[in-house]
Amino acid sequence: MTRPDAHERPPRPDAEITAGWPDEPGNEELAALAGELKSARPALPAGAMERVGAALRRELDARSDRTRRWRWFIGAATAAAAAAMLSLGILLNSPGDVAPGLAPAEDRYAVRFAPPAGPTPHRALLCLDSYESLYTDAK
Image 1 (spheres, rainbow, N blue to C red):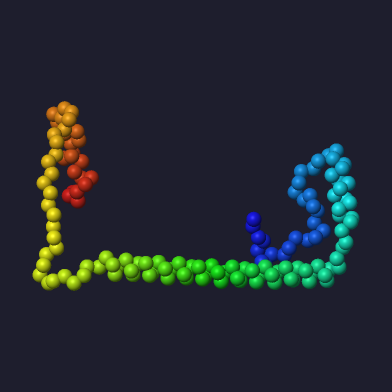
Image 2: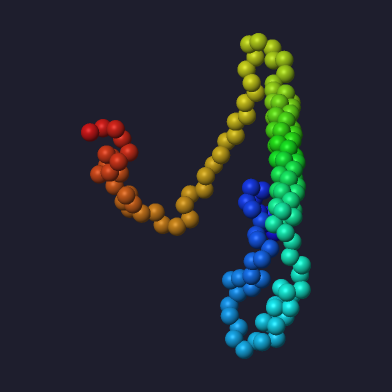
């Protein structure tokens, strides 16, 4: 549900209830009900309507201020948590005391590739020499 902007004026109370609805010719019962509802409600003076509108705007402004403060608080808490997790990750993954002059350990594995399973072409699939200008800086 969307809330109107706090600075917008609330809709006038005498606005037509069915504004924007399609006409329903022949539905006299609905028209009679709308007329009864409209005539049965008491009309407030303009000063009273202004007071109600001002109270409504104050309440909406106060709520939007509270919402804005909560959003800032949640954003700041999220940023602080992310910074703490990042710094903790850096601390935990940093190398400890390494003796100077020692090389890091390396592993080497011998890998044998199987020959292709199918027949091999007798010539290159693409003549790279004719397209050399596409992948070198030579002119």
